[in-house]
Image 1: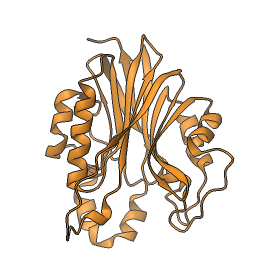
Image 2: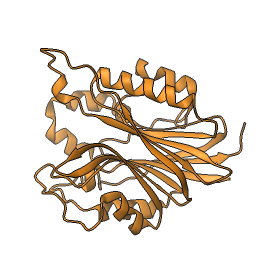
Image 3: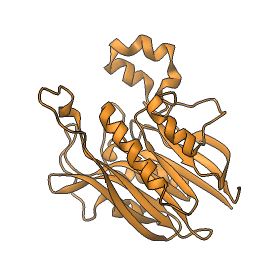
Length: 265
């Protein structure tokens, strides 16, 4: 069975344009145009951000996107901003049989830790999708600090040991493929981008990024591929047919898409 899977950090509905705009309609338009069977979403929240006030909405973002895309949904809150949840979500054309939120442990905050200010509690969405006898999808968004990433990897590895169905793991890992901390996940699952010319998924507008961070211009020009930080991993039950990146500035990330065949090993 063919499945079109996407991983998309939607930056809370904020566009990566000049000037920026904010509406989950932009996210919905991209998702509808891609028409995935399953999409994992990061940075889902309606809180005030980057000069934009709290979005006045009748529905929470994942429910709103569900209605706009006509897909089933589940939201995995990691933290709460201004009375509203913020975290990961999943949209699926197939029913979601069971779903839960697993919180990644925060690093221990030490006195005089200059990085502790950047710690942000993260979550892993775990959903069982009713397709081909059942598959399990994990959606996550890793933190920026090394200790956060270590905790995220360890939590995922523990979860993988408990899952008996075919597995999809996706999200914004905030790490390049050659990062040693990702090695255990590469060993446990298959990276859908393996063997392909690695496309970059962030930032969605390189010129805008260069203009905002001129000190990084040299590094960006020398290593464009270093922007691949969004992933889709699979168990051996899936065969990767092709991958692509959807070009859009509806967020600072571009959706990473994998075309999969379920029914391999």
